[in-house]
Image (cartoon, rainbow, N blue to C red; front, side, top):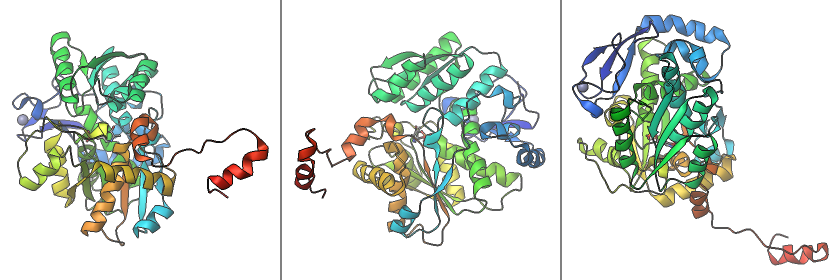
Length: 415
Ligand SMILES: *Cc1c(COP(=O)(O)O)cnc(C)c1O
Ligand SMILES: [Zn+2]
């Protein structure tokens, strides 16, 4: 069921097989199973023409790019503003790093506080185009809270599988939005399998990252925005767990390239935690090996079995970019570096792109002439425990008598 006439076919990332977009909805390649993530291909001359209307439209957020998405129209999207996030100059961080042309893409400003809103909005549009009333998902936290929040805005029922270890704020967000929440006594990868089983048994529409092809398409919109905000750039840094965000970023630039709007792809740098680095290892070794023991305090990128591995590896390679890994302590110091030099409070996985930027600078992958975007994918308030583990300083306790104020400030070394 193809709702946008510009959509032509689906291509499997694993076997490169082409599937007609005119048939019934498919999650993954019928030959390759869950590893065969599907990429949506368009009539690119049609997209080039549609781009002229995009620029003239005055629409904001994902609505602006409806003609570049496999959905019926902008009205299929949820009413909250998703996307249209600022590309912010950060002069103090620029100066500290010696990178005069550095911008932060502030995706923590999305309605539920993470980049995942882009994918959830596209999946919800797909569900509404098909008159589907219930969506399920497995998530480390943000995909779920995003689906629950945007689902609430259009009256969709959401049934969510999250690992019991998910940060409290993300689970509370789900309950506040009215989702039906299943806390899985297991890992994210276990939650993922259970949600697939629910889809098989009950026919529920499944939002899972990579598994549902609309996630990749929703996520590509960040590249369309970055292109409009900064037509020439050299490098993009982003944190990587399942690989759907970086795969989507790559897809966005590839669609711009195929439509003739850009003549080269920016280098993509995927940043992983040392303890959860399946894709970095695969990039280096040339083969993929899951890691059931994957572990990092940056919960959003704690993934042992990346679901969008093929696309993630492919877009990084094609762009001439790299994978980098950083330690949890490097992520902690980048969370503070970012907050204290820019005023942007990112969750650990959100600050991981900046930790990677520091690494890439040391490794000589980037230099002062490069025009660089670092994507912040999630808000700091999503994970207070993570933030607490980064902050060394303590608040100073003082009494309430004004007569003793000066003494107490002197004692604290403030005056
Ligand atoms: C999901 C998420 C990521 C990683 O995205 P993948 O598609 O899993 O690679 C990074 N940061 C935040 C805040 C996220 O929620
Ligand atoms: Zn296939």
